[in-house]
Image (cartoon, rainbow, N blue to C red; front, side, top):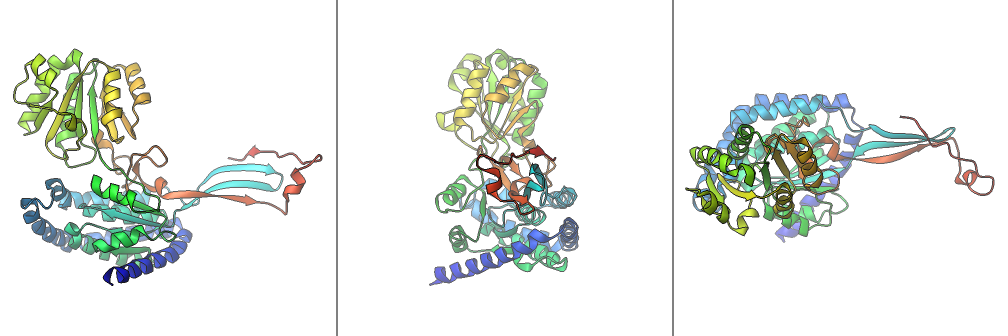
Length: 441
């Protein structure tokens, strides 16, 4: 009985969101930016109570971590400190400053005199987002959906319920004050809401899961609604034979230590055999100093007489640790590095450290990942760092959108044909009038 009632509640919210999406689609850029600025103002005014709500969530989560009911990385992602809060506001300002993708013409063709074809960006409609731990994700998602003209149904994890409620209330109130329909935003809070959301086919246009592998797999297997997301963030760094080893050291340390719980942290380090003897002692010293547990392939431990490292297993190459653990494998060639990444990686982000641009060109062409970097940390794989303002998630599939998904990933397009009474009959048969097919853009 409760589930049936829950389904009705979520369905009602989805129907209202669908109706509101029509209003959002007609908002001007100035109107949407005004609402975003009002949201930023509201967040600043209520910062103290938002951080207090987050503190309550963190305190409640501590015993769950100790009991093994909540993973330690989720606790780190849950905490919303002043630095993260400042990043939220900076991202919001960036979203407001971005070009509005809605209404943008991406193709214009004259088919004939007085008959013109346009491809025009438009919102998706209603987006449902299921996310774990990160309260800042709620702000990122809600504001990106607003700027792209989409209604959004938000379902956060129970571990962040106080934080999410505080943030949602501020966002919805501020947006309504700026003229946005209240139904454009809805916060779903129970586990039953997830199942109801996944069955809202025809009302919800896209589902975006942000969280664990288990969450993403569950969503993908239990809905007929299109799903955008990534199940894992198993990122690699390959230190080539032509690498600048000081760059390699700095990038490896940054990619593992700066935020090990992030999906763009490095999990496996591949090292060319030609530089392994020189590079591994350097990197192992730095990693030990940062309390990183290192697991290395058995043959390299013996050959290079490595100490203080554990033996890596086949499972390590497939593991996203989200922790201060790093697996290392010495490879004989660039081809072996590429093969390893394509077999074990999650198609998220990979980095190659080398001064050989031809070698990197091969790496870039053959590695099947959303981000392929030269001499830069995979931690740059982020919507804010890309200049998208924020991201609704990261897509590791091969279809558009791919990588950090910002505004451009939240719009689709329609074809607009503008004529003066033309009929197809005029362009068929023996006396068919020819098309001009003249590019207008």
